[in-house]
Length: 180
Image 1 (cartoon, rainbow, N blue to C red):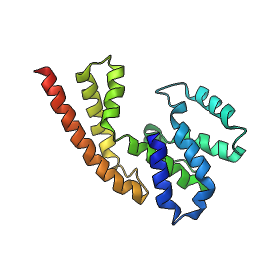
Image 2 (cartoon, rainbow, N blue to C red):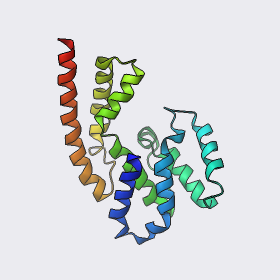
Image 3 (cartoon, rainbow, N blue to C red):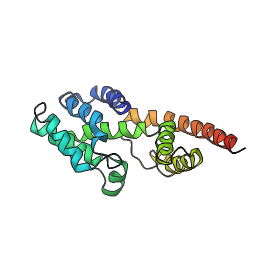
């Protein structure tokens, strides 16, 4: 739900200058809630999209549903790096709000450690090494790669960046102590 919370904060910071976003609020919040429901890390993307379509088709207009699906299938870091941003017309800002909210949640080093410990059967050293590599090659480069467009995300990402570095250092000390 961190993505939803960040999307809400970004939305509130943008709505003052972009009142048209009010018409896109449902798409923003729905995409923020469901964005991982078709992530290949967790399930087959097409199966997830089919489930989302069945679940939402009676509650959203066809346009809202189509845009929600386009947002969640094009917002991942790897797809943006490979393909760039999609052209979503009047929904472009909605796309960036959800995408940036997801990027902001990526700064949680503890979450990354938990995920990697699960993947590595509890091996803390392997989990730490993979998490550190991911952060150095990807997360800590979000600003250098110009992935944030909203002022809110640009500012908060700086704080989260330094918090992540601090947390990485804490984990480094924990891992080092475990090896003694």
